[in-house]
Amino acid sequence: MKKTLLLSTALLALSTPSMAQNYGSPATQQSQAEITQPQDVQQDPVMEQIRYLQTEWARIKYQMPDEDAQIAALEKLGAHAQKVTESYTDRAEPKIWQGIILSTKAGIDGGVSALGTVKEAKALFEAALKQNPRALDGSAYTSLGSLYYQVPGWPVGFGDDEEAEKNLKIALQINPDGIDPNFFYGDFLIEDDREAEAKPYLEKALMAPDRPGRELADAGRRQEIKAKLAEIGR
Image (spheres, rainbow, N blue to C red):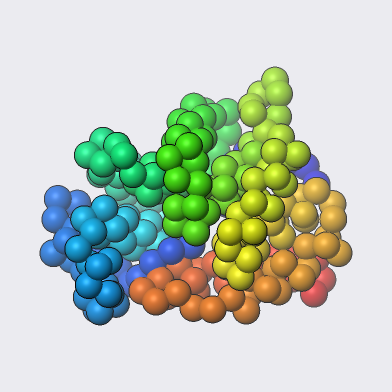
C-alpha cells in the first residue's frame, strides 16, 4: 500500500470520559476510576498527570468532530504535556505522552508541514526508551514503530519499515495482549501488503481486555480495528 503522511496515530488509545479543560489542576479533575486506583498509584504525581493527559487526548481524538477544534485543543494539551515533561525530566512517561499528543496533531495537520512535529515526537520516544523502555507497557516502542511505518521514507522523512517492524515486535513482547501493540502491528502488516498476517493481530486487538478508566479510548480504538478488518474482508 502507498504510505501516507500522517498518522492514525500512535497513538495510543487511552482513557476515560471527558473532563473540563482546566489544564492547571488535573489532580482536581479525577474520574471515579482514578479515585479508586491503588494508593501507591494515587500518590505518584507523575501518573496523576499522565491520567489527565490520557483522558483529554481520548476526548479530543474521539469526541471532537471538527479538525480545527482538535488542533487547537491538542496544542493546548501539548503545552501542558511539555510542562510535565520539563518538571519530571527523570521520568519516561511524560515524554511518551508529549510525543503521542504531538503525533496526533501531526496526523490531523498532515502533509510535509507536519514532519517537524513528527521528528520532535520521535526524539521524545527515543529519549523515553533510553530512560525506561518498559514504561507504560512499552508504549514508546509502539508509538515509535507506528511513526516509522506511517511517515514517508528518505528523502522526505525518516520512514523505515524494518525499524517499524522491529519496534512493534518489541512492543508485543512487552505487552502481548494489549489493544494498541496488536492494532498497530496489524495496521503495519496491512500497509506492508501482508493482509493475511494482519488479521489475527487485529482480531486479538479487538478482543483485548478492557482497561479501567480508559473506556472512551478503548471504544474508539475498537471502531478503528473493525474498520481495518472490514478493509481486508474479515
